[in-house]
Structures are given as structure tokens and as C-alpha cells.
Amino acid sequence: MDSDFDAVRDYLTGLQDRLCAAIERADGAARFAEDMWTRAEGGGGRTRVLREGAVFEQAGVGFSDVSGTRLPPAATAARPELAGASWRAVGVSLVFHPRNPHLPTTHANVRHFRAEREGETVAWWFGGGFDLTPFYPVDEDILHWHRTAQALCAPFGAERYPAHKRWCDEYFFLKHRGETRGVGGLFFDDLHEDFATDFAYLRAVGDGFLDAYLPIVDRRRDAPYGERERAFQLYRRGRYVEFNLVWDRGTLFGLQSGGRSESILMSLPPLVRWEYGYAPEPDSAEARLQDYLRPRDWLRELG
Image (cartoon, rainbow, N blue to C red):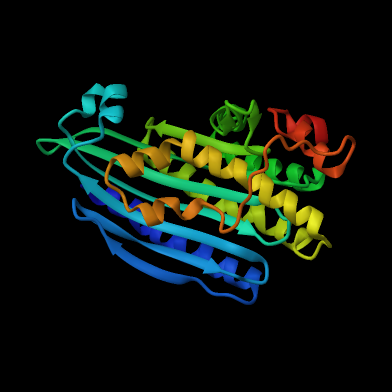
């Protein structure tokens, strides 16, 4: 692998440091514990988890740099040119589960992949994005989230935001429930048009996440709530588990490629509940959420 890959790796390790420092400041009480790990087939990473904070019940920020000599059959079936190639993947992924039900759960990921055969690169790409999962949605927060996403996309063309916003809506969709995981954001994969431009976009997404999320933390962290809101939050966290275990391609790839399960499943919430046949009271704050769990043009509708 060449210096371009090293530049991406250096950016991602620095991004993990900056994310963790910012979340520790925002939480004000807890700190991240770091778990360094290695992978038998190649590579390793550092998983950082903050638990039982003042704001975050659990927050995880993981960095991984893993490699191998063969890819899972599902990957080579979709990309036959990868058969028999050695590969290396580097990325940062985060999931934050706040304590307050009025503060949304959030996820972000930025990653880079390379495959080689006989010393020649046969494929490379960037992927990533960020998305927001509120339980008690606030229009002001959603508008800020999508305005921030649109602004960071703007230098890369007018079509970048609508295309990657639409991709996010389509990807984070629970088909068995007929609903989106939340109010979306950005998602992209297999971006390989120009290395310098695509790497710049990866950095824009990685750097833009805190601009999108921290103002929401400041607004919602102290919102009053009771047992009813907490119970609803834990119930809706069940949807998060369902998506990550049933539909998420990153989870599937990580487990199929011999990844570290403890780090891969770091995204799951610390507490969750399921309830058979749950239906919110008509016209309640809980029933209101359903109207937000579908693809919508948030900037046009709320702006």
C-alpha cells in the first residue's frame, strides 16, 4: 500500500482523537476507555467506549486498520474482480446512545478500502456518512442537521447532497418494518472517481459530523423527561438493533471477514426492550414519530 493509504490512515486516527475529545467535553463527567486489539489475519485497531456519562449512556468511537488475503464470498460475488485479491480497509465508526430520550442517537462512519493482486491495485474506494435517529423529533434539530450536511457537500457539486441524502434514506431503511431508521443524513459508498477529491469529501464528512451533532446536544441534553419517555426510548432502540443485525452491510462484512465481534457490535445500545404489538396512543408525542420515519425533503419542508 502506498503513501495515499497512509495519509488516509493518519487522518482517521486524528479524527478519532478529535471526536473523543469533543464528546468528553460535551459529556463533562465520563471519559473514554481504550481497548487496543490485533487481528490474527492482519491489522488491528483501537476501540474507545465511554459509559455511564452525564449525557451519554454509551458512546463508542472505533478505529480499525485490517487486512486479509481473501474476501468473504458475498463480497466477491458482487465484485468478481476482487476474487483472489489481498485487501486492506481502514475506517472510523461511531455510535452515540444518549441518556436523555430527547437527544437523538447518532451514527457516523468514514472508511477507505484497497485491494491488490500481484502488487497492482485492482480496486479502491471511499465510503461513509452520518445519520440521526431521534425518538422525539424536533424540526429545528432536523433542519440544522441537513443544512450542515448540505453545506459540507456544496463544494463537491450541487447534486452531491441530494444524491447522498437519498442514498442514506434508501440504505437506512428497515424493510421488514417499512420505515427509515431515523431522519437520515448522508451515505455514500464505492466513491472512486478521483483520489484527491474523494479523500477531501471523506474529510468534509468526518469533520462536519461534530458541527451537525454538538449543537443538538447543547439544545436537548437537559430537556425534562420521565419514565414514559425513557420506556419509549428503550423500545425504539430495538429498531436500531434490528437494523444493525439484519440489514447493515458493515456489520455483515466485519463478522464474515473475521473481524473483532466486540468492536463490531459496539454500536448496539447498552439497554433496550421489545414489546409485542406495541402501538402508541393516538395523537401522542410517541405517535408523532412515525411521520418522520419516511424519506422527506427536510430542507424544503422545514426550511
